[in-house]
Image (tube, rainbow, N blue to C red; front, side, top):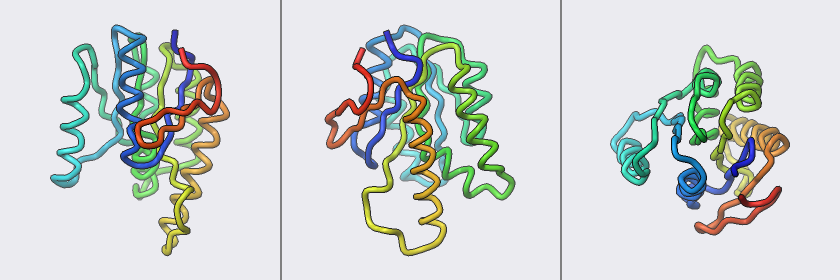
Length: 173
């Protein structure tokens, strides 16, 4: 049985999405995939296509680049996989109209109140060098704070490095 909230965290291209998908597929029949990616170029289109073809039958996809809270509120199924908090945060930081503190509060409340268990995929961005520009430093700090808040609420936190999971908190189901 999946815990209420699982945080799958790791570096870019570490295998965290694939492991999150496997975890969901192992423990649930009906699966909801909440996608925060926005496709602006061919590279991102190819990445989204790869993610879609990799998932097995039985996934319903909700595209929610900004309003993940509403998607979670309406989610019906055995599990929700939100991939990823990093792109969601980027979307909000680059939006001219976003109220980020409010959006984060709404996201955390929606996760807590979501009927099915939720798996959140997020990037760990604080292990590299200090970025040279202000926006990148603001993003790194905001992502770190969001990850801390997600990890504090999570029953299970798994760090993924080179495709290998390491449980940081909780027990694997």
